[in-house]
Amino acid sequence: METAFIQEFIPLLVFLIASMLIYVSLKKLEVPGTDWTHAILSFLLAFVFVSATKAVEVSELVIPWLITITIVLFLCTILFCFVGGEVPKYFSTIAVIFMFIAIIWAMFEAFPVLSHMLPGSSDSGLSSNWENLKDWLYSDKIKDTAAFIIVAALVGFFITKN
Image 1: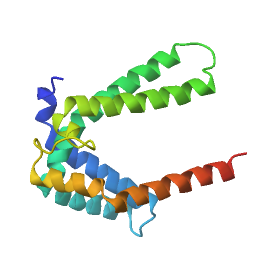
Image 2: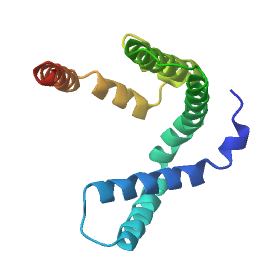
Image 3: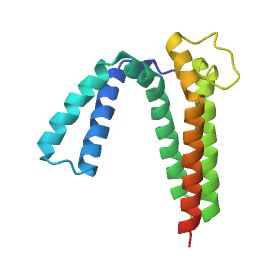
């Protein structure tokens, strides 16, 4: 995928996305203060985020794909608007599952370093930081925590289901 035109704007996009997410989080969590206080605090925290080199490196890998996915989802939404009639409920669930699988596939296809993050793959193309992240992701603590969250979500879903 040719993303040379996006590469020039990535530091600005990282800053804007980080500041927007922090600002929305501050408003949603109802942190005391005015809107201006929240805006200034979000800008300061976004500057800290942008100054972290690893955060910017990961963002440089992810932002072009996020932009592409956003455009594709926007075009899909426009196509659904022109479909007349009601879209069946099961179709939207299937579409979400398909899009999730397509996004994950595209991420591993576009970034070869991510394919080394799969379990059972070699660590030959990974830096020491990525190796540490891979070891941490596949540790027993993370597996147990993920299993607990999934079971809790399923139990909550089935208990509250009408």
